[in-house]
Amino acid sequence: MQKHSNGTSGSGTAVPASDANRRILLLTGLSAASALVLASLYPPPLLLAVFSSLLLLMAMATGFTAIMLAHRPLAEHLNFWDKAALLTFAGLAIGMFVDAEAVRTFLEAQTQGGADTASAAPGAEKP
Image (cartoon, rainbow, N blue to C red):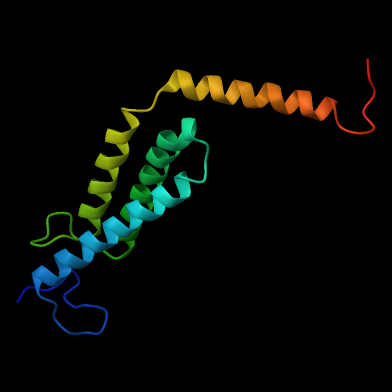
């Protein structure tokens, strides 16, 4: 029976490595799923860009958590460092499929549309 890098689970008892691995993989999947749900709230041209950015932000937060919990990067089982690495890899891999031109075109169209609707607001003066 192997222990977490700090020697125990949160309750002070030893945790088998397979349970620790399963827990980290589950947390990684839940993190990626929550990032996908949040990214799906954005328009389709921005979906991959937002998803990639959210994954990278989650990876940074997970790395910070690993530092705060004093997890060892080269532990015998998966820990938060491995979760951060998986999220970083996924974020960078998905970022390769972002069409920067489509994102730029969409954002420019939204900026132009926003300026036109602001000037057409009730009470706005006509030139």
